Image 1 (cartoon, rainbow, N blue to C red):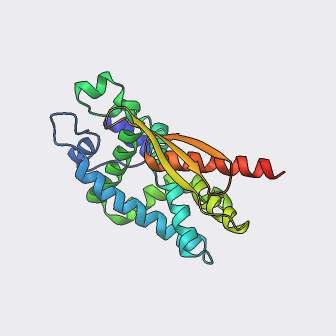
Image 2 (cartoon, rainbow, N blue to C red):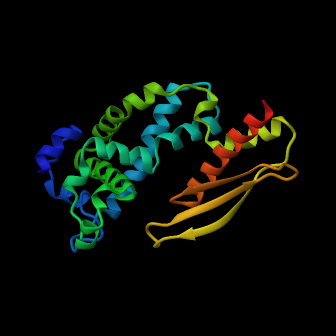
Length: 224
């Protein structure tokens, strides 16, 4: 199984136990991948930051940070893991197996970071950079220096400033679900404006982004 996955990700481990460790979730009784995840998180952030720095020589710090945030997040890393079908190779505890943990974005994205950390320990920085850049090449090629890569909260704030309006206020209306699978409902309002929007997400930040996107669309539609 591990050889099959190694072919998919394009890297064959000298130390097979590192690879196994990277695929082992904390719900199992085996040594888990959380330390490798910590290491991989730092590595992928640096590698992509450097790539963006070189690709956009005139972009300012804020824009580079937004670009990086759009490339390194649960959704992007989780989707990358799904492309490699990593879920079928995960070592999970019985509880996670029964609840479909192998398809959960949070687990998949963390495993992807753990694999990056494991590659670094097994082969060094240059092979890690090569692997990450190969995986991210299509996404980096699609990047362009424009406002499309600003997150919805930033776009809404900048739009409101451009029409001399107050900044939005985000209020938590409800939180449901277990600690590891919560759903947040956020209301977005703007002082002296009648529009309201409701956002939903698996974290407060995601719910706020959803509410901001809906608010921006509503305001622009009403202005037409």
